[in-house]
Image 1: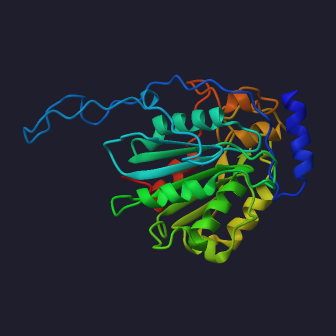
Image 2: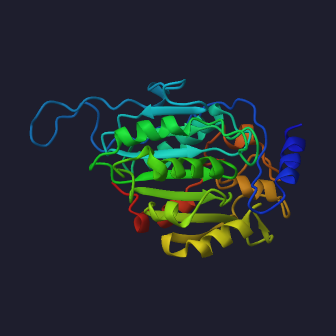
Image 3: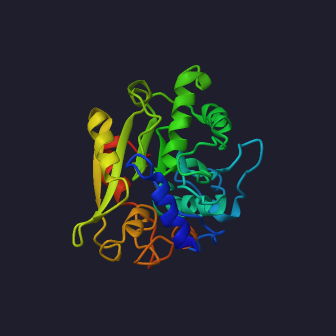
Length: 309
């Protein structure tokens, strides 16, 4: 049934600028272990001061949800002692909030903690592939984000997969349109559009970003790409000076030849669970050694974009 819904969504999207994903059941949270902090919990610092407080595992800190943080949104102050940066992850069409949280948690463990991310947002996918309902609480995200950004915030990382790109672009428009009156986020946002669309972007919006990358996966061994390569190449050419197009090698994804949906979701789960298609309840919801969270695009561009602590 999920595969049928996914294929139907692809057909409904049609054009390269209308990405598709599939419906998902509630995924299970990641069970991978958090890396140890740079300084052991409870160890006295080198200056002989009091012991550092124990760092909580990310799963021990509850997500905030509800009206205060916005519809379809979860937020967490990870209390990361390594930095004060922020990351927002926008899931694709039909992915529920549990799936978005699972993706955010897995990426935090794999990369974001070490890069100094403290404030973490997970955003569920839009209810329609082109985000016609505008149901996500981006204005609440903007309000909280602006209040959290300070001179100590080295970057605000925004990752948007598939149709989640349309939702992310709405946030950028709101920030540029008055919800960030002091421009505290200007020049701090690093954006990765992961095989999504470009509708909702404009030259003034992109000019406020530090970097914008338009990412497409390609399994060169089979010649199979994601759904939205043409859109990513077009946006990359239009906004080349901001970062431009970037192609991820998906040859280790394990996807079958011609399995476009599988390659498409390999930007979330580097080795999707079903080589013939996307199984979003698993690909967003279950990360482990055999199915690691995708990080290649971030590793490739982090230094250039200043995604460092």
